[in-house]
Amino acid sequence: MIRSVIISGAALLVLAGCEDPKHAQLFDGMRYSGRLQVESESRRNFTATVTPVSQGLEGAREAARFEGTTHCVRKYGSSDIIWTLSPDADATALSIENDQLTVQGRCAE
Image 1: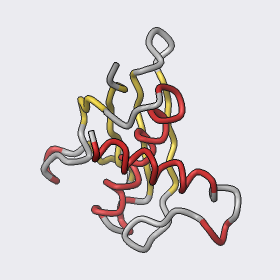
Image 2: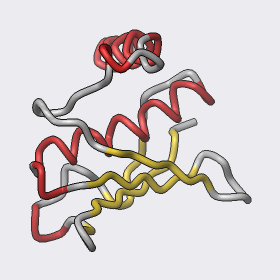
Image 3: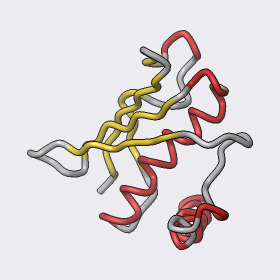
Image 4: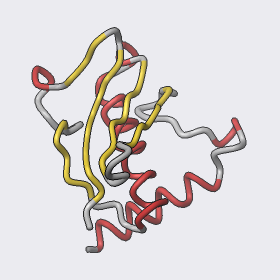
C-alpha cells in the first residue's frame, strides 16, 4: 500500500513537469521515447513500448514501467499493475525487437 502511494506520488510529480524539456524524465541518466496503446475492449489492458533499448536495458525497463504506471494512475488512480509481459522479466525473456522494448499489463481493479 505504501509503495503504491509513493509510486503514485512520484508519477504525479513527474507528470507535472512533462511539458518543460528541462524537467524531462530520464531513466538511468538517459531519455527514452515511450508509447502506450490501450485495448479497445478493455482500456485497463495496455501495451507500452520504449526505444532505444541500446542506450541501456535498465533504463528501458524503468521507462516502460513508467508508461504503464502513468496510464494506470491517470485513468484509474492506482499504480497497481498485473503484468503479462513484465519489465522485471529476465533479459532473455523480454520482448525486444528493433531496439524497442515491449511490455504488457493490466491496471488492477
